[in-house]
Image 1: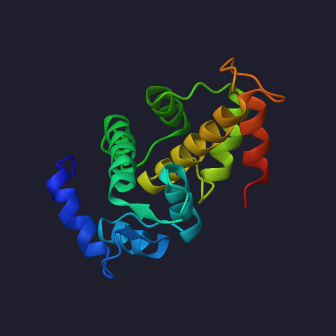
Image 2: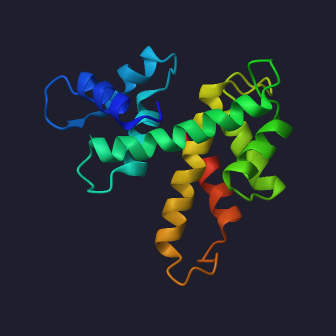
Length: 169
């Protein structure tokens, strides 16, 4: 779905009320058509990640930004799943590094525990996407406080990710 024209057609189909924006429920249904099943809370997080105008919905431009992120994550997953249909924790570590997240072991394994839905050490595509959405959201929030861009606030990113992953429901 890299082609903007194709994305526009798809977005307009999802925007059934023709408001120029889509809700989390509409996005969840649209993702399900593409065999991506996410809880509504994850879809809401996707919208918050790219809700540049902070109106709680997703415009077409915001949707394009989300799509770019999802394509990047899906590409990394495809490169690492080796025909198994899932990633092992070492693959997940390599994948998040390829996407640009540098986590220490305690933070990484805490996040893995939190997103390993079946607790079997196997991360399906939707698990990996959910984990990456969490990390991107955590980074966005962290960066909003790290105005000096020094990689430190009251907590460093690893401590922040560790704490938030432990607090995640």
